[in-house]
Each structure stands twice: as C-alpha cells, then as structure tokens.
Image (tube, rainbow over all chains, first blue to last red; front, side, top):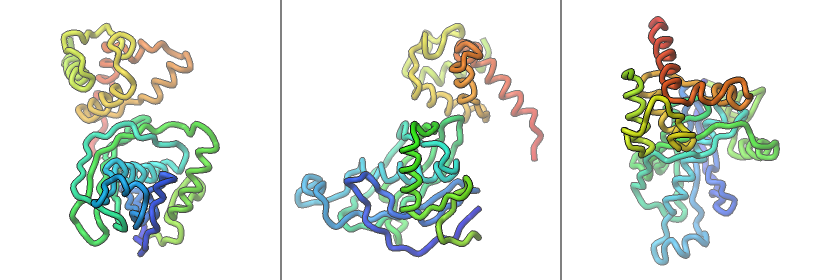
Length: 178
Length: 97
C-alpha cells in the first residue's frame, strides 16, 4: 500500500525530549519504505559547545534521526506490536555540515527482514536538494514491548508525527491511499 | 566437515574476531566460543544473506527458553549447520514463481 506524500512544514525537532522526527511524510508498507521530516531548531544550548562560532548539528544526533525514522518504519510494518531497538550501525557517513534552522528529510527502507531483527538503510538530505547530508545502514532488534507504558508512549508519538493506527494497520493520518 | 560449516566458521571468525582454528563443529556458539548475542545476530544476518535463507531465530530461542529443547539442539555449530542445510534444501525446493 502506497500513500500520497503530503505537503508539510516540519516543526522543530525536540532535542531535549530526544524526539527528532517531526512528521512522517510518506509511508509505503508494501515497499517497506518511509520518509520523515525534521527541522533543526534555530537555537539550542548544544550549539554553544558544538561548536563555538560554527554551530553544526552533531553527527550522533543526525544518526539518531536516521534511527528514529527507521524505528517508525519498523513500528508501522508490525502495527506497533513490537518495539525496535537500535542494535548496531553498519556504516554511517556524515557527508555535510547542517546548522541551526535547517529543514531535513530522512528516508529509510528495510533491506533485510530477519527473525527478531531487521536491517535498514537510511539517508538524510535537505528537502529540495539531492545532495546527501548523511547515510547509514542500521540493524535493529525487534522485541515485544517491555511494558504497556512504552507501547502507549510510542502510539502517542505516532499520532504526533502523523500516523494513524487502525486495527493493526498503520497509515498516514488524513492521507489518501493511492 | 561440510562446506556449510567451513563457510559459517569463516563468517563467525571474521565477524566475531575469533581465530578460525579455534572454531570446531562440537562447540556451542555462545557457551564455548563466547559469541555475544549481537555478534551472533550479525553472523546470522550474514549467513542468511550468503545462503538466501531465513533462520527462525526467534522460534528457536523461544523453544530453548520454554525448555522444549536444549540450547545445544540449535546452537552447537554442527547442529546449527545441519539446520542451515535443511533451510537451504527447503529454499531450493521452492519452485520459481
């Protein structure tokens, strides 16, 4: 099932809450692919140290953006029945600097589905630019939710980023299926 | 020993940084070779890619955790390789669409 992309202006990522995805822009269950939007805040205390006079988004946080994008894809594929936890980074390349106020698109697709794990590729770029900001291959363990609290939190986050969970199926809220 | 064992032993050696000559068919992957769960997962991924199979790791682990079988049933290397051979044979017997 493929869904039409929606035009959007992403809200700022919530760095303090470790919430980097602002909106799921496209979700294609049959192709096991997703794209998400995010925006780096204009100002944040991390830029005071990273780096003085040259504020750039830390590479570990761009990596986390890729991980969270992959996570929303895996959750959508399993209907929010199991939780993916980042297990390893196969290869991450930080290809360009991005500073405060930058809008980002993070795209991910599953390249291998294992028993209790999955391997995904992810890439980050600016919305109107094919030049890549960073890329990576990430492995996740997929396990039963450790408790109901985390499951509820992830379902609430899904709503915040524009996903709708209906009887185990996940779609973009307000999107038309094509 | 089978070519399956040779291939899997080579992958485990490379991925888990274990000298190839210490990897024997009668050894348990985690208990004897000390492979941790993440390195084993990485090895399984590479084995699946290499042979074009899907290893039902969750199902095996569940059986062991439930006490239905001993861990050696699946995780001693010669048994693991025999299961991989079964999966390969099963995959080969699936007619092309």
